[in-house]
Image (cartoon, rainbow, N blue to C red):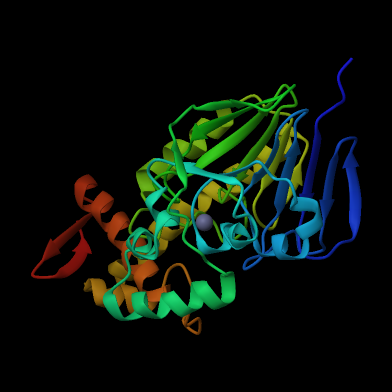
Length: 308
Ligand SMILES: [Zn+2]
């Protein structure tokens, strides 16, 4: 009796593939960073988009009339089309909303040291068109929106950022899982607002949620088989243990300082010189070390970590 929800997923190239009735995926690279996949939910009376990756800048006509932008989380590559939508309501989880309201909030979100942090200002402005939205509204965990025929619910899945949320569209059973992106890179918990233990719990939570279609922000795009989703999620989660084992291996060779470990690199290759690389390694390694110290597998003496 009702028209089915029109949900589209777009990324940088405009080659369109029908994944299944009502869903579309485009882009050979499936929205690899710095781009991402754009999800458009056209309810019977409300048009909602999830995040606004760079590709939004090529979709001006299709994003026209957007009532609400629901950000699954705030990061430069998820807010790159906000500047196109001054009339739309922008929503972010209450733990992330300060990062879209001001540049200071965004920099605090990353938590980088002062110098690279300053360099982030031209980077996010010029490469990602970042424009603060002081009027952005906050949403709470488990908040729902009725968009006409469909309901969207924000399921809090923190870890990547403090407010990272999966957005569930019902009754269609579409779950937008954002930067729990199932990529071979693995989970990213290298910002000041990230939390490794929360990330683990969020991965476990995703396994419990009944959905029919999973949509990531990058790489994998759309997944329609539960078994495939669970396999990809497990491989993604395994990267955490692999990083832990790698850190233990290096400490096992000889005692190391935190600086030694950061210089070794466990997230990015040593040649990668992104503005946030060192900061990300520091946050990532520190969280693993804290867990290892608590478990007694690693001990710390005068700034040197060694096996327990
Ligand atoms: Zn992100």
